[in-house]
Amino acid sequence: AKIHRHTFTIKSKAYTRLCDTKKILTVNGEFPGPTLKAHRGDKLIVNVINKANYNMTLHWHGARQVRNPWSDGPEYVTQCPIRPGERYVYRIDLKVEEGTIWWHAHSQWARATVHGAFIVYPKRGSSYPFPKPHREIPLILGEWWKKKNIMDIAGNTNKTGGEPAISDAYTINGQPGYLYPCSKPDTFKMTVVRHRRYLLRIINAVMDEELFFAIANHTLTVVAKDGLYLKHFNTSYLMITPGQSMDVLLHANQRSGRYFMAARAYSSAFGAGFDKTTTTAILKYKGHSLTDKLNRKTPVLPYLPPYNHTEATTRFTNQFRSYRTSNSPVNVPVKIDTRLLYAISVNLLNCSDYKPCSGPFGKRFSSSVNNVSFVNPTVDILRAYYRRIGGVFQADFPRNPPTEFNYTGENLPFPTRFGTKVVVLDFNSSVELVLQGTNVLASDNHPIHLHGYSFFVVGSGFGNFDRRKDPLKYNLVDPPEETTVGVPSNGWTAVRFVANNPGVWLLHCHIERHATWGMNAVFIVKDGPTKSSRMLKPPPDLPSC
Ligand code: C2O
Ligand code: CU
Image 1 (cartoon, helix red, strand yellow):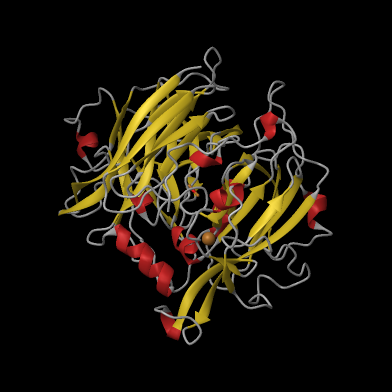
Image 2 (cartoon, rainbow, N blue to C red):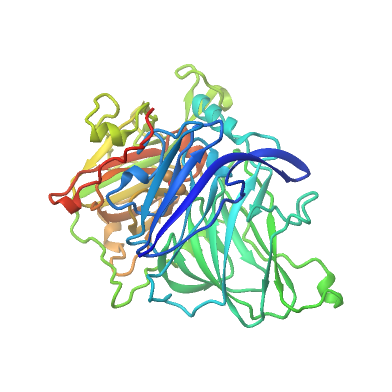
């Protein structure tokens, strides 16, 4: 096991995109930020220095942080933010992770530009469960706001329930590509050798949009998601939600030439605006000549499903199955100790009841889990729990909403409450969590991400979850293991996990506007009975509020 030391300095730097120069927040001046690389079994020590004018935290999305919630990062959940001019050392022990994960700011909307890939290779001496690729290429799908300062968006959206400003372009590795005004030179290019295989490590770092992604003429083989191996399958396009990462094999088996890869939104949202543009990058075969008339033309665009093609997203995600081998069995919990139903919802509340207020129709947007709209406390929940500081959170999160209720047709029958409520779980208890979309306003998927864990996705369907019939159809044999799952807005998804990682762990929608409006929930997992099943002590440099 090796220890990797890094220094991440958060600072602003000027970048020019779409003919316009503005300052953005970066790590070490890079956009996207630096790629972390390590092997399973290694440790990373990242010294984060905040030279920005904003509070900041970083999160290692997909890293389980076993027994160490102190390094997880969500502000006011596991730590107070690092204030301007201060620093904090994050420690990441890669005990179980393997594949592509990523890191991003977990403070306000800073993650729009403060993010990067995090590659975890197999343990030293072991290899991939697929033929070794000739080369590996991270592809980070991001976005760009032409004028707007990202850090102004969050506060307003959160305080007044208004709609956040939508981006002006999507990007691939920080570059919008060909189809945007004055962006021809700002196009990411990747060169391949004919007949070789490449591993694309694709991350959706976009704030609010799920994306379709494809490469013209090429079939893609999906081999992992969220840093967890999948049974391989071939596809002509991907649907990847904010927060997700996918490992994809590309076989350069087409005629030598240039091909576009492209990404654009999947959104069936009515009314609500979203960025409808398309980002492109170029896949170029080595040695092909530009003097050949055929190759001088603009490359062809790949086919991408239409914006609102829900069936295309379901068809794609229904193919996920765990990759199982004799040394990596799939241990789906069978006996369940704790059953939870979380109704996740986007609602409009009357401005007369909530001030300040700037949503449409004299109302404000609000998101909730079982009608609790999460409010950040002023001291982090982890410290409050560990040091027994009272008044920071309440342990009365409503665990038992009505099971027989038309969730996909109506507002929940009890009013939205604002609060910081948690669910406390016993160490090693097995949990089934049914996430029920309510479809009252949002019509996208909700990519729900759980910190500190991965879970098995045992079932999913449209409409209301039926607690008698639906469990009979669960896949308990080879369900995919994930850390960020798309829950249909008018349907449900059931996940299972064993609460064996003590600490305070955030569960939230990775669509940033939903999280900003309150679609967050928190689990506190108690310590186990032995020393090695208790959470670690807080580090001495933990920032204070
Ligand atoms: Cu990638 Cu809590 O987030
Ligand atoms: Cu959501």
